[in-house]
Length: 342
Image (cartoon, rainbow, N blue to C red):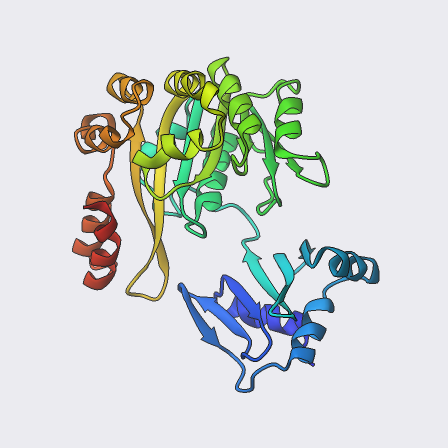
């Protein structure tokens, strides 16, 4: 039987981001974006089940067997972990995300200075976009830390689950976890509006009611930070409108045009030294961008970014080119990312 604590300590020592427990496969660590086997022998179905369910109480196991999926957080002196346990082709397995013990700063993430400027926005909506596992939450956490460290502001977060723990600095940060502290993102957001917030950070915009309330809050003087799963900035409108009934499209466009202040779109790319870096595209919402959002021409946002350097905008092409010139990433990595931006 593999000892869970030893396994997690080994994963942290190897700088793994995830651990995969899977029947008929070795234990796998994700290191620098790649899955690396760390046991010689494959796990049997029984071993995979024992390791996975060994992280649950009897009550949690009963709930897992009823729902066939279970999410939980483990926190202790050695770290914090987000765990999903589920059935895969009839066998029980687990995926463990290793969470940093404290937020990284914008400087530590080597993000461009425009992101500090967007973090200092006093009202409106700032979105962090990208596909799954591209570091969106890490960037949002760094922006919260920037606000917390430099401004006397009240920050309310609504997260599922809480991944990074903040300590109060110049301001105060009150973190709420969906399912534990509030029922849903939507109910948590409604309550946050009555809690005298300066900043509301929403872990993810995943339904129309949450989107609509967030936009209204941003329009009425609160800074709202959130993430959105989307493959590029010019697809933002399509993504948001896909949540809304057709009759509300005009109102949604108007609210977004009035409240959106900036978008950070990012990709996590492997570096030559075996690590990972964020490559990002940044759009600052100008009058031209607002007009495009109102008039249904989302694909023209690409032109705004490409001609917006004087406003601090950055294209993904320039971000990747700079990393390649500095010998941070390989030519192959540069080409694979840029193939989606031509």
